[in-house]
Length: 83
Image (cartoon, rainbow, N blue to C red; front, side, top):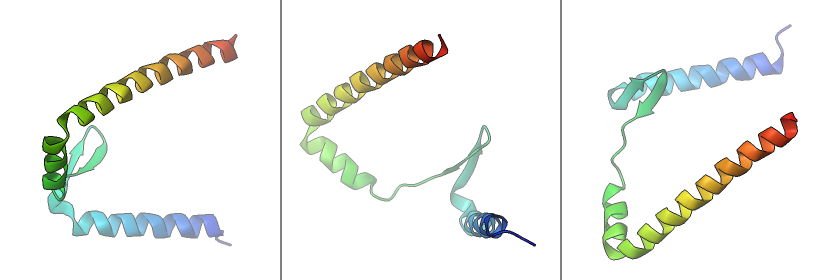
């Protein structure tokens, strides 16, 4: 008997396959990843960046700092848990 997990996996793969076929003009395949080209909303992002360039720069710097701290913390955690 076919389990619910197998049926749901088959349904998911069928839906994703249909979406890929329907939108194949906007898809590219890069290094095993499927990337969808998307340009809607870029004018909103551009206008926000033009209005608040200092805020975006500060937010970007904060994001880089948090990313570095998270990377260092994750490395330290892996080392501690391995030992």
